[in-house]
Image (cartoon, rainbow, N blue to C red; front, top):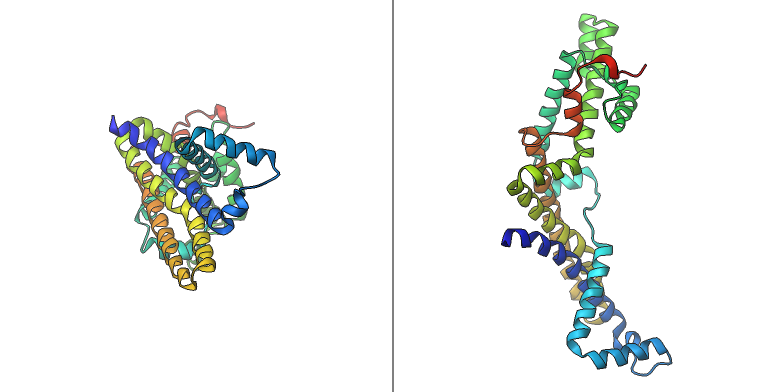
Length: 287
């Protein structure tokens, strides 16, 4: 029972905490006199005052909590885009799961090529996802020959056909890597259905990362407001959101690692890879 409740509590915690932090920052920045003046000509504010006095503090707290939850739901940050170099620094090391995915993708591409399923042959398949075929076509139009094959061509005189096969191999590998990213949501859904324990571990890490991403901005705003109202030394508290951001990136990387490992180990299957392995007849080729 507890296992079924915890995911819901995690989903409630992030928007509620984020909303409260924004409300606290707004309250400190503007104060009671501006936000809730004792005397005002606004009929709306007067009626809100009357309602608050009628219902009492518990109802006011419930209403504020609900408003904080709504605000937090709107401004919750799932992830933050940042330069690849900075990501590597924040992750504090190599991304072993991504390395495993790279090897796995290369193996899938080699298998397809060995079965005469090169990039050009796959572009015209109706039974493959349209997004995958479009990406494959786009990559194939701009991909270069593998530098190793290009050097071999200079040294050993590889034929144009062999060089084209090198381009197709690189294009297919790139398209499969993109598909692993595009299929992420589908992989998570399959993981939830087929391996609940592994999914719960992923969901816990994702939720912890999401909480830190979401409170990153309001904590910065809170530190700036506190420094303006109290002391410039409060700016040193900006270290806290920076630390939380680093933790969020690492937690998100660990969550994504769970999905990649499940894909590489065959626990769940990528819809795109599944479609590729099920190609059997030439009848699906676009004529």
